[in-house]
Image (tube, rainbow, N blue to C red; front, side, top):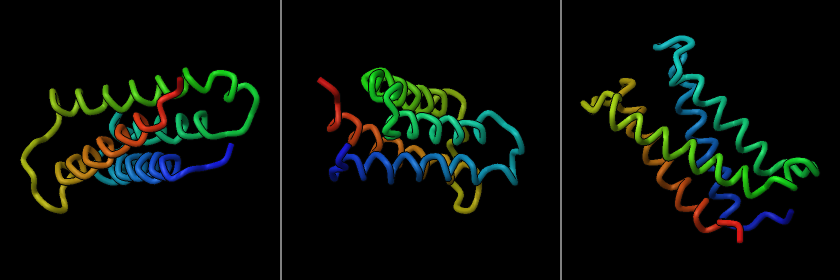
Length: 113
């Protein structure tokens, strides 16, 4: 698989989202928000690893990553801390949502046929 600009966008914003969620370990411990970061890493690997199994189900990996990202945003809207204060977990949530929206844009640009 030859990587294009949209693939680099998916990688950058997927990793940014994962790292933002993983950075919350010190404040939250093994919280589902922290574990969400591992979900993003696993799905990025499934999307980009050049293994036959993953390539055969590439379209499903795309749908899983899009669905996971949308679900994360919706759950944050329903349950997340919305009071933005720099240096808090709520600020990290806003930064993660920005990265997730950009991830969705790049994923849409790479939508399989």
